[in-house]
Length: 535
Image (cartoon, rainbow, N blue to C red; front, side, top):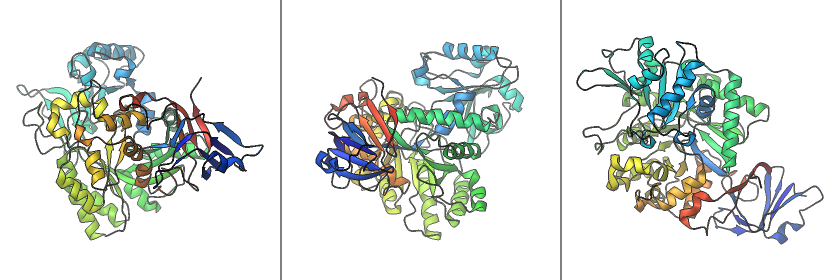
């Protein structure tokens, strides 16, 4: 007999035939059968849990192919949330929150501020070093933008680090300076941050703090229908926390891990390659960051930004450094997930990965370019030739569209978040949130990729629109392929793991402009309910 049976539904299986079924039966966390109500009747016993869907739609559990639950978990403990969603509307609001934190923080200890989106502030800019000084003159302050690649520090932070206007920019980073006086304005790009705050947030969190923060974040993800996520920047302390959660059975959803490249020697010494782990927690690739962020308008591009003449963005690593990291890892059998937003950074990554594959040829390496945002037809051809997997921002056209339009222009946006072009080239493209850089809800990502309009209704690269079914695949079967899980996850087929999301409305018939508002009724992992909407 089955442990769980779903009946009277619209089961969108996402199998190769595009099957729509009525019912599905589950045993021991795996799918027994998919078909009609009649097909599953004989599998219902006295101990079987039966869920009458009453016509509701079921999809395979959503998979986010790149996000940061580990970083978000630590932010919960060690930083002030100054996101738009938290109620921040102005620089004064940020200052007030910093002042309150300063009252309960010993002088000289770090105050960290996260999730700041300049485009959603009344002033349409970040606070300056001196505005942070006003709020906390006796505390070092680090403010991070929503994309996580740009920082503002106050004077106390620079003083404690010994950074002055005469301090040279380090490789892969830059200090912003007043063009007339050369004085530091507080703005810090990429790896220059490490000179001011070498340890993130100013102190190492305790293992139990990290585990609790990650657990709470993953529980939130489950409310959005996510059953599996790919981490984006996993280091030792995160790995320890994830393993502890797995050991104690407290991991709310499945996790696929991209380990930060600095841990590559340690993994090699222990003989740990990608695939190490199980169906709940598995190491997948080595993460490297090549350039800045789209939301901060700092991605390394070949044509200047429209809002900043003669500005081409920031590289976070030299080609030589990237070459050394990738060739060493490739030689030892590792695959790579490389952050590259701008076309300049993407081409640099492709050059290095092409060389690595020639020197150490490997069948089906499944290297990934994370974000792969600003592209062109030549990049599409190179991705196809090298069999590299792109994963693109899902929610960005909607969530950040109004901000990035002035920076890139309507014409260049036709080749950004290029889902249509990638699918037409038969690339196994997946989509992601990069949370906290954008909301983690897959339905918002699907909405964004289908409609290609900003929050204010402005078209954002509308030639790259895709269908609802295509967008669903970017968050299911295609994302499963990125982690070598296509035989276990991503579709509702016999033998696969029983991960489902039940929707409150039919996503295939809901007007496209309302997709983001579809409620998540239930999330099921391993045949067990991990989230159920109240009421």
